[in-house]
Amino acid sequence: NVHLSPPGACLRLRRPASGPGVQAACLHLEGSAQFALYAPDLTDALVASSGNAQLFDATQSLTDPWDSKETPAPTAWVTLQAGELLIVPENWWVASLSINASLCVWWLWVPAARLDVYMQAHAKQVRDQESFREA
Image (cartoon, rainbow, N blue to C red; front, side):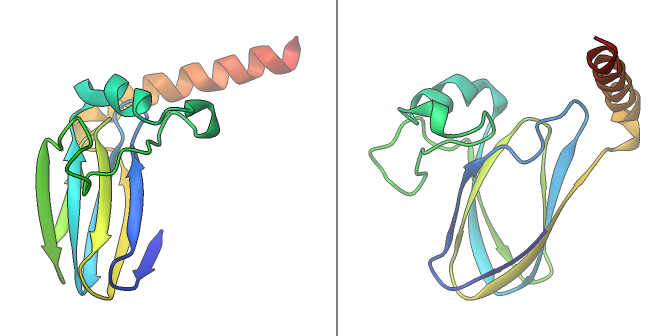
């Protein structure tokens, strides 16, 4: 995914890499942006803070990291400049705010050390789909 954002643009808090073994990467090509990262153990609090959670899928939250009244607070803050790369670990949550006009590229990937976990989960998903078709 390519994101071209004007100053002040915000990407809602989400969990971009929610599959087993999957991580997300963001390469910032132009401008700068601030990222709020939340550890996976905060998932229940982030989903609960969305109030009417059925409006969103399980990988999104209405929590606003830039609102000081919101809880929980982010686990980490990162500011990326052009040419910098952010790796979002498996099941972590991330939101971003463009400081100025910015361009970044997001993609999902599976590190070699986690490939077996991903392949097992993918094989199970394929078996489940085949069972569903046969039923």
